[in-house]
Length: 184
Ligand SMILES: [Fe+2]
Image (tube, rainbow, N blue to C red; front, side):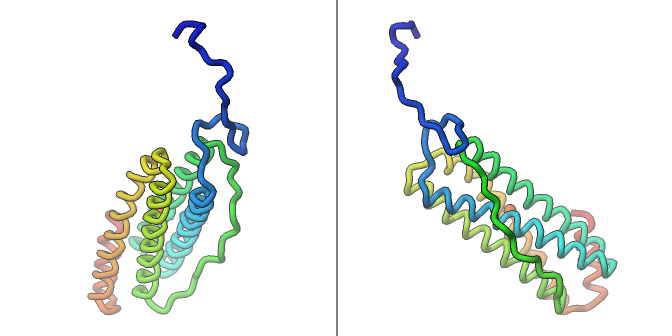
């Protein structure tokens, strides 16, 4: 490009953080992205508390599985904060509810975890449709691999719930599932 073709008067947009951005984020999409960030952080804390519940009962396979899941949720949260910062946003973190730490049974706990995953999937689907509605292709592209991995995660929890339900609280069966999860 020669000097004469450079348009120095082109207006540059800056996000709330002062970072240059070429496309502002629609307000509704931004609110939903921040809400989803809270959901990922909430899952991080909830899975950590579940890992402790299992560790207290010497079910270390379940416990290590939930520690890994907890770390994965924080990784997802980082992805959203990285993305929002790249889009010129300041991140305001919301307060999180206290995690649930009392469970009547392993089945109740795993059912709750499955529902958390299902809620995350629904939230991602909503984000996806809002991004498309506001023709924010950057966000659609950002969400693509996250939606794919979320669907796999939901499937994994459904599989574990199926095993736990089938075992009907039988201790020997639970120990087999614990061993199975220790290898994941
Ligand atoms: Fe997640």
